[in-house]
Length: 511
Image 1: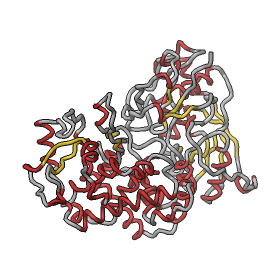
Image 2 (image 1 turned 60 degrees about the vertical axis):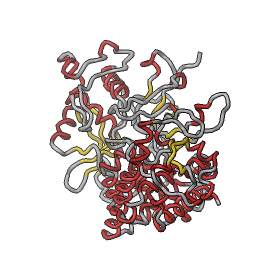
Image 3 (image 1 turned 180 degrees about the vertical axis):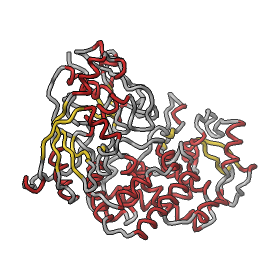
Image 4 (image 1 turned 30 degrees about the horizontal axis):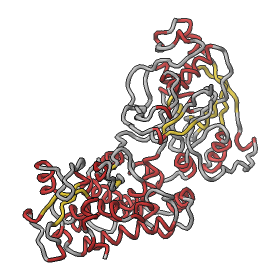
């Protein structure tokens, strides 16, 4: 019988351990919702990737890697690095951390992504007297030491001994779990251990390599990449964070903390794998125009944007930051946090099941392709220009996803294909321009009227079946608008979007 594989959520880093779920593989959990590291993820099983068994002593965390192989061919002379080896006890390293002399997360390092089981296995290995890999530290100009390699190991040890999570958003005791050899240690905190075990752990010495001449950022990055190649599978954005240090990278991380943005993407806390930062980078990259994407390699496209970012001056960064904030605010005002950047799947005809006429708005996860076009579209207009057209924009965007088969394809199949990218950007850009330039609000019934009609009677006036979702409800003109009718309550009828389209609604737009 094949052993169920461990899998990791690409949204938050949570690892699904089959043995903690009765040996049931994730594929056999159709209703799975990721509990998340902080309890707020909710990703479905299709957001997980299989990870191969790894050593509990390495700093490895599974994720999709970069399309580019890391160049580790740079030769660094030992006399330039001036490496020195020392042995330091765990308690001394904890004291260095408390005194601010040991920096676990310099700005070019990634976040702490180990699971509690991985951290527990490291501590178990110390009790079993197994060898622990070398820790690499770099001595900075101010005399402090930053972690080049070994961040996950040091963080795990410091958290356990202090019984305190370094991430302020994580609470609760730091307890051992998932141990199979010293299984009677499961559930224990450091203070629960015997005095003998406490001394064994606190006095355990780790081998430290201290690099004394890495003030050159490029040289530091070369060593960082060399040490992590083949052991730590950083995702594309984590690599960019390490490779492209500077004001632009700092601003991207700051913009990703925008509270309204966090609500829109459904991540109230910082994403452990920097996927929120990557979304901000996507926004910035598209500002140069979607036609700049010449191939389906989006990773290279984003890498080039990071390269360009090195040349941005403070005024450039301020302007980009304001555009991002404006687009975030308008997305929030127009679509609300639960609906922004979410794909609408239209209903269809099925004689055996009339309920399939109901379309569905996928509210659980954002669609990155929709995020791109919506955010970009709002960079063209001010809040004053958009404000009076919010209802028309919302309805037209739903109509686009419901009626345009090519647009549906462009946001789901091969979303990085340049032709599909061009179609989805240019199509929504044209629709949005038409709404803002003409008084489209005059032909759009208000959201307030739709809410009132849906609450009073959510039956489709055309097929006479229940409309289950208000976003699938369309208020159509009983007497068609282009025949001279008025947009007034007396001329309003509530329908499924599918039924409205089938009956002829939207025909004018297609022509």
